[in-house]
Length: 290
Length: 305
Image 1 (tube, rainbow over the protein chains, first blue to last red):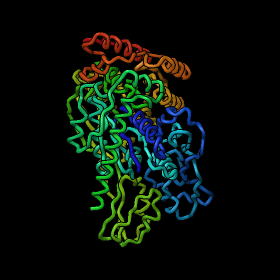
Image 2: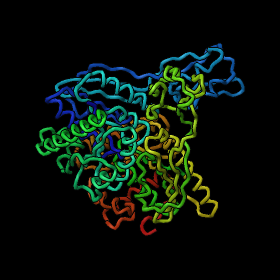
Image 3: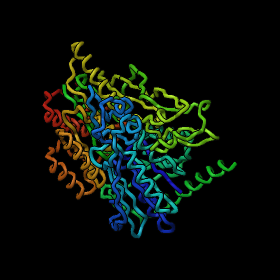
Image 4: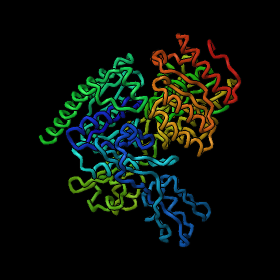
């Protein structure tokens, strides 16, 4: 079962929920926590005890290189949608930073002058220890191809064959977030009781609905703000899975990057949230079967 | 006129509050450009009223014409993003996976791939409670366009600045509210920046994510200044936030404690500098003065402007 944790607005508590849920489930099941916030990955820091590196794989994009066979016709540049190839007066140039590796130019070249070479854009690491398996996608600084790294990390997580795969998704409602949530069984949207968060969770809820994935809402930092994400979520058809109250001790632990697994109140809330997630997944299964 | 971009790496660090304060501090001589098109909150923060909205088209997208598709599967074979699904003997495109390269168009022998210019969202201009312009966008959720739309927001803000100057009301600065992360739309937000204000949330994730942003700014040769936000939760990470700024030769322009009065001010949509709460207003005024000074802007009257 794959659970995607997403939000719209950043900083609402995706990582807090993901690491604690993964840690809790790992007591009784095999769990993989995959950090798909590849531009700002922070999950691994919450598991300092699990530092045994299981694998480390660079992520590549196949980028075309010009060979001497190039006639300068510009057919490659004409088909490239990413501005990665420029042809001016018979002279062709490739900008490997903009290439998405679709291969269209290679097929379009009448002279067979383009040869693809791998270019590194990020890294996927896997760690394991006493808690959940930890998979992390990390985009190289300066690169723009987040979605390719997200795909690679999703695949590594899938290959762990864990009972539960928990995806910590990037903030937002466009390509990286969509890629990260795509294919999950259930999506949990995390909101805080602020105007900004209520506004942003709406856009996120829409794209998750478009993907046909059942979704629920978790309110984080409950009590610390006057907006009401639950009412907004109800209008969007989201089920309220539970609320994690704001406490100073949680806030301090978050700042320090420390888990609070032993907090009994949090544990109770997470149990409740998990039951809701299982019900959401089951209801979707029934719908598909009927 | 200069461009000041406010970015953070981590989401929720305080970019929108800081950028709204910086724009409000300039009164009608500042334009706020909300390039966080995925989570556009600057217009809310500036209590702004919509004055114009134009459709934004994001370029070619693709669909399969069910009448022409023969189900040969060549599209699926050339697609490197696994976007084609066999459905009842023909193929359909999973738009969430499509990267819009168009390789399928070249491959389809029966001309069944339809190309259409996709509606990506709306580009909007609003007037804040200070009668300054706020340029922002609303995207169609799930659209593959945040980088291009962020660049369009920035360019539209530049057009607004030119128009304002032509009307005899020159603009001192465009303040860009960048999205979280370090990817495509962040790079688009940093492209024309004369200076970057890096908001470091004083905590483990905030400092780590800001470090990657500082590296990005260094690779783009951008001048940076740091604002440490939500300090006082963990002394070790307060110290590491300062060390990080020092390592990238970035002056600490403000060091704001975690205090719910800031959040309460943001909820009143009053922009921190003009807050009815004296503590918030004074903290933000000091922040603005430090940023304007580093940016080489003339010192401005902040309160009651």
